[in-house]
Image 1 (cartoon, rainbow, N blue to C red):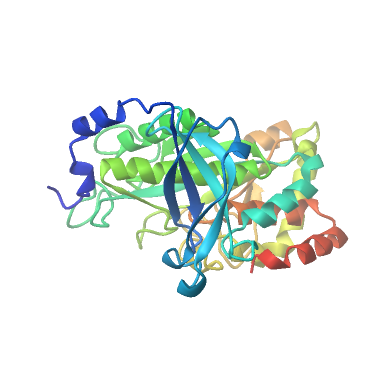
Image 2 (tube, rainbow, N blue to C red):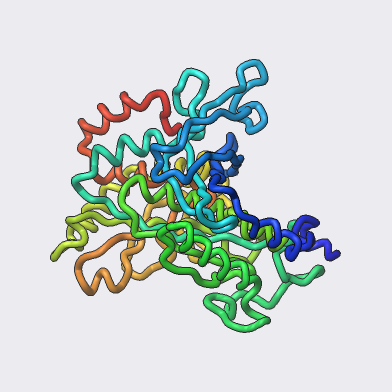
Length: 381
């Protein structure tokens, strides 16, 4: 067996398919999915229900051992899983479900990495703006040995240039995974809108959206879960590290596109420009929320090289990928549409990122103070 493939991926899939084809006797498997204490890892466990749930309200709360996920201590380790969004299960098929959950502590306050709780309150506050988000999730495929997938075991592949949207065995590494993940997302009901090979070899991207408000984070987190599960079947690893390879290689981001009724309407470019000016003075805060470690991961990526801006300065321009915020050329021509925030890292929490954008761009200053005081239990610090 190749060291680049995991042991579990070598199990006999024909034998597996026999068992998966057995009837379920009217029962339903529901897999609960949640974010762990790292703020970027995902966990899951499955229970049997006596019938197929018709909606999220049919799925009961559950508990798990938070001491095993870096979310609690041994002496008080039970934590609550609160179902918030249900999807179809593309691995064991209908009627089985995947359920995204929020995590609450023993006192039913949000866990430290539960940024959805705050995001939902902010999105409810700004709902009349109809904020749309589209997220471009970049990731890198690694072998089970941690080496970039299909890279030479010694040395490096040819320099960047032919890989972006590339076609051919010497340019596109791991397309089977990309296509299987795409179909799995469509089956699950995730609003996946595209995919492409990225600039670094073995690096890919998929896009989720447009989604409105809280739905953005829900769909991206479940799409990430599906990516890791598909990669598990193929015996490789998908990393969201913002700079998986040092040197003259592109990093991985999570570019976040943002629009409102006003920016999408006739003459919306003026509103986009005003929005950018609101983002400018809050640059440091948005960088702090651009990855799970307060912007430290992003320091390796946002260098001003490899299609990034400098982490230390805010910048904006039309059709320029070396800035903090880009206005796409088509948007500038149409004079309406959306802006692209290029700062978030691949491993960002989309709840934290979209909350920050909505708060900075849509809440009046006096309102913002009121909202933040309400959210001290889950302050995004």
